[in-house]
Image (cartoon, rainbow, N blue to C red; front, side, top):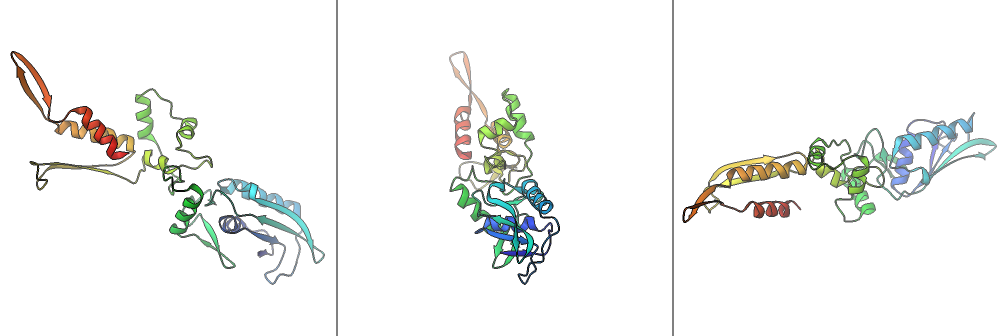
Length: 257
């Protein structure tokens, strides 16, 4: 339980910490020693708290929060009751899923969550499915993916992102969204060797960005190094590649998937 003499903005952090751990209750209008001092306008404070919870905390935690006025020691106070949420980690919308936006309870204190604690909460709520779990990065753009979808005449709006699982049911980007975004943290490294011993590099490159862009760029890079030779059958010339393009495409897709 947390006591607050008056309403303050840090109540949002306390709500988040309760929702991310085992729940709890905030009493507004109560001194630190537990003595009721009361509030002047309980309805106004309840409205402030309700709006703050609705507008400043993601994903939606309102179903786990109840604000009510009650009398303690003859004084009117506001109780904000918070249950443990099911879509942890909850975070400040303006900060994102990172330590400065995610809070937990540590004893009687509200403290920023560590990255390992955040990852543990994500795993607990999303299970072992990496792609559907919420991404730690939420400031994502999709210029590369939009280009790839446009080339195939496929719409790529929010509705399609939800259908594909790029945006989860909680409205946050998933790890699949991170992989397809311009901010994808993974890269693909490609090398061309002299001979079959893999000891001498002829060329090498590293590709970044959306996995869809990387896939296309890597294929073009390999295609440039896939030599064409001529074979003759009688008077007919037949151009042959060192490696069949279809085999390269399949091997590349298998490597990424």
